[in-house]
Image 1 (cartoon, rainbow, N blue to C red):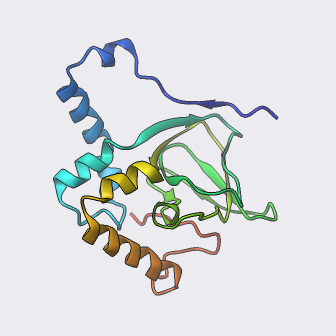
Image 2: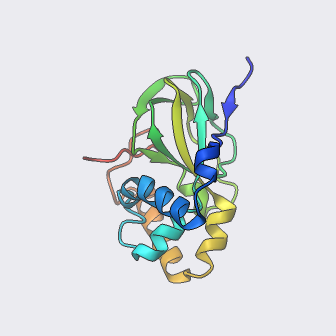
Image 3: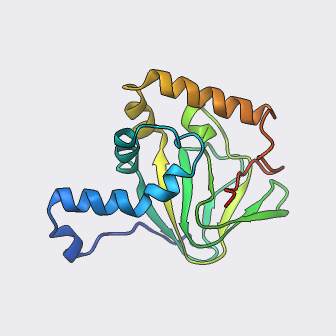
Length: 174
């Protein structure tokens, strides 16, 4: 099966805007989704805005594979719009991800982290990708916050927080 993956390109109209206007549009488009992620929720607003500017938009068509189980993770993925299905390594469907859900945060802090589930687009889906390399470079300026985030994720995966389902995918509570 051919994998169709479209990276969204901003149209001519958007490209004609001044940089400051484009920046504000991007920040205001994603600030609510990012601030709902517990690891980032308490960060200073300026830092949050700079983090949002690191996000890359990707579009997946229906039935596209977003990530495969066992493949090294290269960052965190946030669902902006659409529905994705989560599958175990045995191919059993374990749940769905919708707008605001996220996964892959472990790959931001751990080298050679491998995906524990496969994720497929059920509908055409737009995701925001926070790549590991860009995130780590960004966090060099904030070592204390990086350590706190690392501890928070570590605690979650050790079971001290019960918001993790059996597939390793977290969902946002409304």
